[in-house]
Length: 174
Image (cartoon, rainbow, N blue to C red; front, side, top):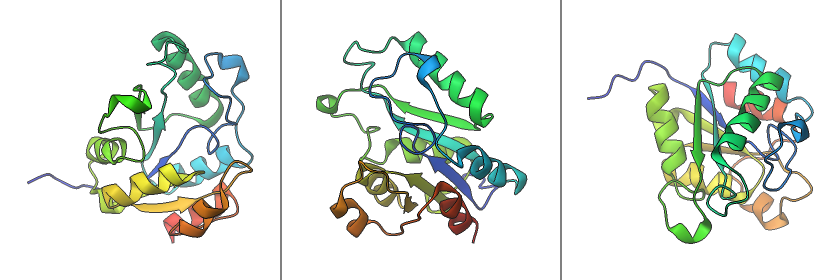
């Protein structure tokens, strides 16, 4: 039986949640933090809560982002927001049928296992319906932080909605 040492972990979507969404970004210079992201992630670290990133990056499969460029972009995210305890990245294209690509649960399940928590003890914070669907499929809690690209139906279907990433973190901690 696994040893579940922690009772909460928070997993963030990368693009549109932690950093501004630049489609198929392969340039670290284009990475900018979303408003309040640094403070929200720091709040969790100060509370002793493990933090991770769960992100679809189909640009790798499509040949638009080299693996090294993806690594440098993710390193830039950490320069801006501090280190994450786990990175779960799906490099596959939508047609690949992989288990990890959101809305499937693979990234959330893998990140939870890497952090030593049950999926049900994870909160997934994201900006679109795929993030919420992956959380639901994994048995995790989903908290949507809408942006201008979030569809009204995604907001209506979300289990929880927060106006800001900071509010989402406070909900996860509460």
